[in-house]
Image (cartoon, rainbow, N blue to C red; front, side, top):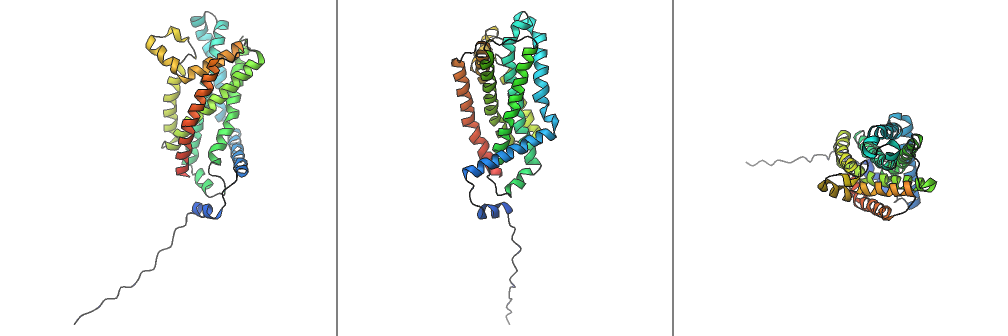
Length: 283
């Protein structure tokens, strides 16, 4: 006697629906104008975050004043013989250091937003995927500008008299802002691949300090050992500092300005695609 068993079909379980996938299928691709408007909205969000968290301005408001005065009065006499003679060397160096410190915060804040789930909310919104990344980058331009202007103003208050005049100062500040914005792509990329905001800050500090202090920002390169001088000459920060010195002190657009702009373009060409690609994988 044979018995036959009849298998009872099981009912399929409930399907999980990804809200971001639904939005992607039902929303048309945003146009360039819509993307630009959404990016500006994200930039405005970044500015509101700065206003509600004044501590984010400490590196913008306090550091230029503190570092300019401290370096000038401590090292001025030892390096150049007097504070007034050291200021034309120091101010462009402080500009570069301040720009790197300020742009380092871009990656840290990006990682914090990812850890808090803010970008998960953006995924469910019918907006361009690049807007949450590009918006803060635009907002940070204001931070670079404020830090640069305060650095020059502090130098003027303690006796710095730039030979390049108003146009030279404007050019030097503009180049510093461009350099800070381009270097911010490095830290933005780190923010998309690091595991935490603390790790982003630690890695960024390891990048910032060698590039800043192993440059001609604070001492002439010819006073360094030969092996260190060779590194200083190829350091991209050194080209930015030399270019800013030419603009501030002489009002001259020299070859160093061209090299600095070229270096900024290379950094953006390398790290902007890396940051966008890594960011897109998480969005």
